[in-house]
Length: 495
Image (cartoon, rainbow, N blue to C red):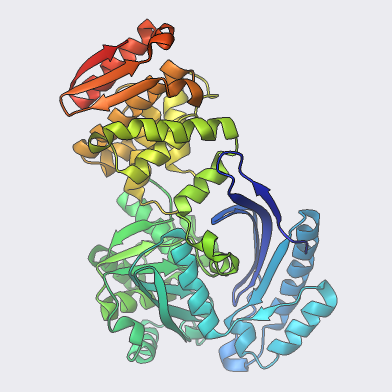
């Protein structure tokens, strides 16, 4: 693969690396290719394909990889190799996990893959899996404390996270394929086995309040929870569940067929493994005494990419990196940065500095949309944008601010349910300020600097340099009045 290209940002002069990265993940149940466009710390999937090969099916009893699964996996990897070449992938990370690691014919499988597809698989150790899963969680949610748990087909990896750092982890033979002894799900046997294996797990002794759940089966449980609770924002990344409430649902999944139809709807291909995944999750929560379970869509694949970044990229705020990737137009980016500095004069009365800066950089995301629907569409775009490092409440606040830049008095179910009135008011006030700045300057960073904003808590003032009085239209004065109204202040226009 070629070396990633280095370019310079015109505004900052800092190096910006665009590279196309492929990850081939040969798991116990599935074989997957994800191709990402990576810019700094931002990872945006552009291609994602999964094949259910079932390499680990029957491994516990036979000690060998499933023969049919081997053929399916090699065919999939051959296809994936062709796709990575066609998509001009610059860096490729192919790896195999627990099934290949534990099977007596695992190395033979790796050699055959190399011979028939040209792909060299790295067999991850259990420690590797725990570390990369943890780094994946940190890539999407920096600075956190708690425990990350990655449930695969054959194994569970647990990793301690302390102040945004990986502090060690372990692997446990608790994947659904490892727990299935044949004859279908047997609750007593499965629960006894899970408790036996996790009894001495050090990661659950001083675990913290939050458990970060990684893996397809637990994502399916998260989707089920969203459906049952009618969550306002259907997005798995950083979806939070109260542990006590979740325990009740997990018990019903394990002990009854109450959710059988819904499980078939939300996770048809995983429905058979969900009882095993629910039993493991229930015991992890109880042993670790967690208060919150958060779904992480970032896992081993993203952790491997994160591990490959240089030190500077790893220290970036993932939200900043995501915004850089989402807004490639330099003119729009320049205006967004200027607007963030301009609006900071009202910082005590709008969103926190990080969210305010992000909203300002998203100021033009709906500009080209149909004016009759622009605000609503902009809300949905921002709420569901591929931006890491955001809670669901953060997303709702960002989306409301950007949508309010296009329409006053906007109401949306997501923001109504996730934000309290004070935070919603702050988001709308920021949106009104963004609209004022856009109208005054014509979305030009050069013109915006000729209008000075001040805000003392009683009066919102706009001072315009004398040579630029012509920029103050009737619309601009109306926007100033509306912004002051959102802030519950008087306004003054000084020219």
